[in-house]
Length: 349
Image 1 (cartoon, rainbow, N blue to C red):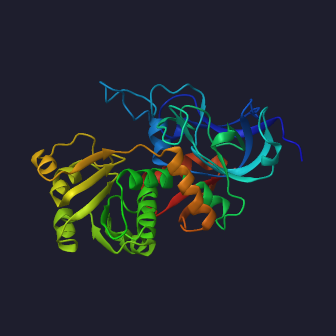
Image 2 (image 1 turned 90 degrees about the vertical axis):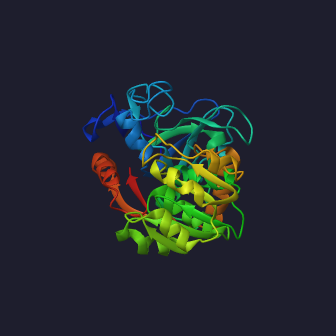
Image 3 (image 1 turned 60 degrees about the vertical axis):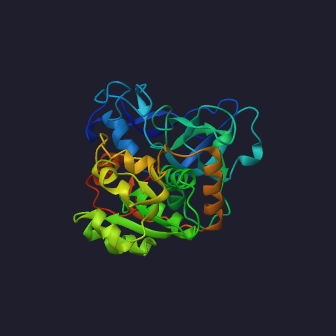
């Protein structure tokens, strides 16, 4: 079957609430040299979709400025970083044998060639993404997962949440047998952190709201503490010898109060600021204990390769919380913003 000339896509033409998401008919993009065209089977939602739509990232020197992930968004923009689907066409210089393969797209735009490059842009923010029936991607960034036992919608949940989680775990140098604390454990990144850390052989202490404790424990946490009570006290009781690594998407007061919980040489890895981006802490707790605070934005190509190996082997089981058709993208983002779910929300073009 040939590729049609037009497709449905969900685009934003300005920053704002869910009302700025517009379902529209646009031309199917043509893959350029080095690119492939992917027919989207499933596209997962992330907090970055909300923050890009709202312009909530700020800019260096102006934290309140309306901005996308790494600067101004070029409107109109099709949202959606997380894509699973099938290659239906290829541009010049791309092997035709990719056509028909089931793939996951690495959504990162990197600052350099090579396995340890840093992400400086994102599909759905710096280029058009997967809230559409078709999307183009660099052939280097599509990973063949035809043999994976995971469903297309499970595969779609992996790139941003599980990529971010694996980046945090790798940068935090988490080893088998270590004790790890996971904040925001019921969210997309949080569940991914719990699952991957557990698969690594770590002892996992998770922080979540009371209504989601059972679901987080089911995902693999050894202990779950209630974020509505004194978190530091609960962690101290669960891990009296301290924690080796904190995997944190909350920051704010949690970092201020939690830093003394690190063991000697402990690592506190931050990949989000749901609890607030302005933080104060006692610097003595850092240098006197050879502790480290590590920032982690997404993943490197090496991290993503590791993630795709886990996907092909079925070593992780992503949790899909809800699914919506493409034309209900606004309702899907509303559901994400309410944070009543455990796992990931997926759009089906």
